[in-house]
Image 1 (tube, rainbow, N blue to C red):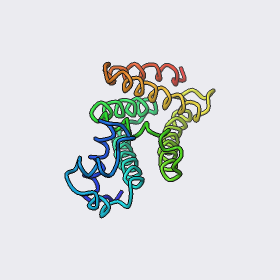
Image 2 (image 1 turned 30 degrees about the horizontal axis):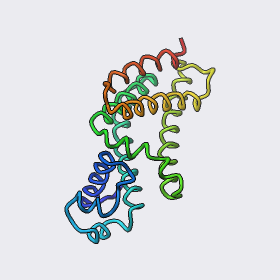
Image 3 (image 1 turned 90 degrees about the horizontal axis):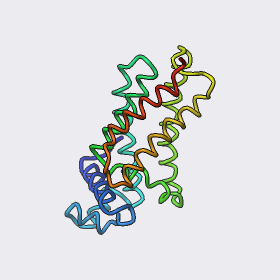
Image 4 (image 1 turned 135 degrees about the vertical axis):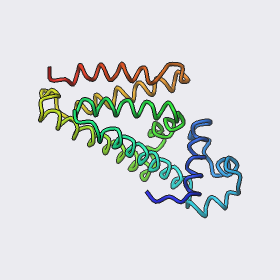
Length: 194
């Protein structure tokens, strides 16, 4: 990820604007106003609105990857790694709720091929990473083998997504980290080979 300091400033402002007013209100005019400089100045850093949105997605994809690698690198057990991923992501979303509006805007991207590709790659990379953890757990008999790694990864990703979406739609009225702990316990029961 090679963003300049100014590009990161624009990415963060775009994220804030999307979080406050929704993706439909992310215009170069509104973004320039949010940052406090002219629209032409935006075009010195990004060629268009699509590139800005794509960069927002890439920025948060990288940030989440780094965090997940950090929390899973020192865990030895596959179940502990999965628990750490859930805890990290929910803590991250609690700290940065505007990110949810960006990550969960994929239906708005469905008619834009370049943005759809970015969202698809994020989902595939997350699924692939979870599948590798699950496969290692299946090899050492800590995770059940009667369900495919892909289906277990879908179960994990789906339960997290539904919980985060419910949290967002409730206007953040419940504690996401507490819900994350419940999901961790449930996943441990479902995934465990015992």
